[in-house]
Length: 163
Image 1 (cartoon, one colour):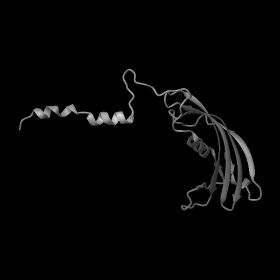
Image 2: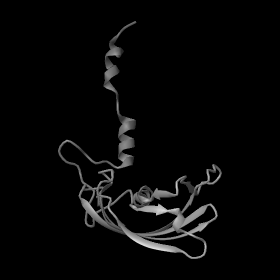
Image 3: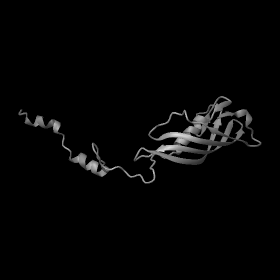
Image 4: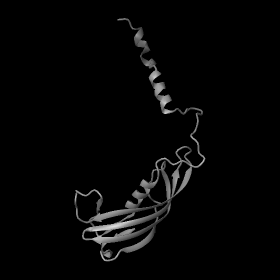
């Protein structure tokens, strides 16, 4: 979604909406597999050097279950406000510097979507796997107790040396 700063003014808000295709986006396959049906509504004002964009984002995401690694469909609907300026100023953290009058909003929207998806996604009905062949599941307390009582046998031969 391209934004042209010259279309915005202070008198009345400029509104538009667009569907964005994130099918070619590089995503972490262990967190988000796919982003579908992203609809973004934008309302914006220009105040001197500050462009304020209010985003209303509806998106369908295919996440990954933390327990089973199966696909989990997630519907997200959230609102966010982004502030842009074409004046370089290091003091403001909440304002994004965009020097050109026409810029792409897609990377910012993708970042917002990724930040809205929970880090731990659990499919309904999924349970933590129990121990199986070649692995076992321990609680953190059990693991710490096991590490305290563990003996390192690599140094046992040194005990046989008589000095």
